[in-house]
Image (cartoon, rainbow, N blue to C red; front, side, top):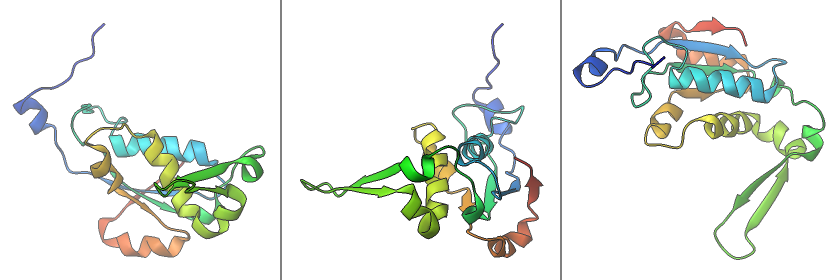
Length: 149
């Protein structure tokens, strides 16, 4: 069985306005949260999903500080960054990074699950992450719908 993919003018007609969704990260495992958010940003849950079009929705993640990490990831997971200079590798454990940049940890997990193509930056702009529920007030005008993870 073949999957139908719209092409040309028909694909342009499928471009419908993006919806807004709110995801509460309270007591949700980081990986499960990231997969759900990545699917919503890509638009994979829509019947009109087309791989080469940005048909995803806007996603607002609140309570990033209250997410969970399973097993020993809090102790063992290490985030790496490199300055580009010799000896410029930096290692920061999740235990030290979580209280400071929990929103950054979620963003890294979600962006790692998006396809590495030209649509990635456009999809990443549709993701907003806040450390507490107060950030949701900024998007009250968009009337976001709550989504359970």
